[in-house]
Amino acid sequence: MARQTRISRAENIGLTEKLRHFNWSLFVLMSLVLVLSIVSLYSAGKPVCTETAATCNKFGGWYPFAISQLGKIFLGLIVFFIVAFANIKTWLKNSYTIYLLALILVVLVTFVGHTGMGAQRWLNLGFIHIQPSEFIKIAFVMALARYFAWMNSVELSKFKNYLIPFALLAIPFLLIVAQPDLGTSVSLGLITVGMFYIVGANKKWFLIAGILAALAAPMVWYGGMHDYQRSRIITFVNPEADPSGAGYQINQSKIAFGSGGIIGKGYLQGTQSHLSFLPEKQTDFIFAMFGEELGFAGGFLLIIIYSAIIGMVFWVAKTSRNRFGQLVCFGFMLNFFVYYSINIAMVLGLVPTVGVPLPLMSFGGSSLLSLMFGFGLVQNAYINKDQQLSAKGI
Image (cartoon, rainbow, N blue to C red; front, side):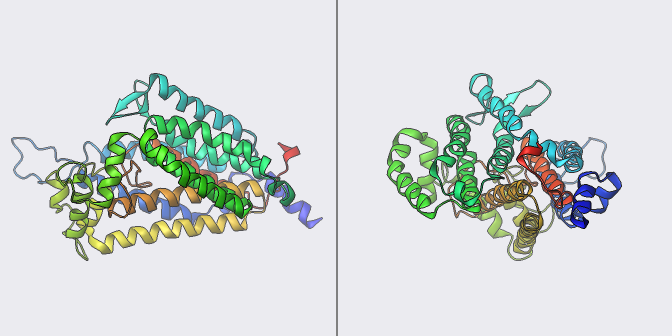
């Protein structure tokens, strides 16, 4: 009787009760990274000076990045709270629909997408450009979570039950590769491998998949990759081979971060970033600018915050009593970890350069909104962690 009362209460809690069950620790960690983002984007901006101004800061300004990102953060927080406080059954019921909508957007990019920086990844909606590949990551996790939520160990041991998830991956994967967007496609693959491991897929399938991937590597290298993508991998192996061409970005990134030393050159005092040696300092290489100004100490602090977020999401997943909430949290955790680890490794020259933003830090709206939606799902799972869900109850 007590258990039934607890479940019933979990299904009908009001806004006040939801706020009481809100995970404020995770919210504070998320907000702290957003604050650091604005601080960094202010540094990446340019001061607005007039001829009559007696003094003018040499570096830093609200325009064009920080002020724009503040608006996106505000919109992202609205999305976050709506997702967090909705009934968890809403997201469970509409998981496949959300995936389908995100997939349609990815398909539209192929036909009417906007080309920027040599890749057709964006949709021009007139008032805003969106990158659908960012949204498909969260939608894909939701679809997998619903699919696997009520499978028992016997069903999970059958190979045929992984064909549909593979199809859910293959369609957006191939479309995103064609854009081309190597970073997102690789990340989708890693998230899938992680989700299959979490649900309990047979270990031998991972070995078979690894062998098939190795056999396919030559075909991908010669037939599936663009010249500039091959050049990035060659540059990764030997970054000094073309220091002013393919190796320029990563060399400047390592110079910027390394020149920061232990405590950095000081806020707004970075030379590599402010004198325009460091490319894309507001997006993919924001960690290099952050490290140049705040040093190893600042970079290490950011990694600690990211690691704390990963640990907190993992704890939410482990304490959830419904499988859908668990798998959504695990999937988002994998997504978040893959992106911040690849970006930081890329900036430090540990992996080839790919177009992967630093979560919650890099300038841009699509990545931020998709992450805020994901954080909202994690909060929703935490608020509703005692609610029992069933496939029949959808």
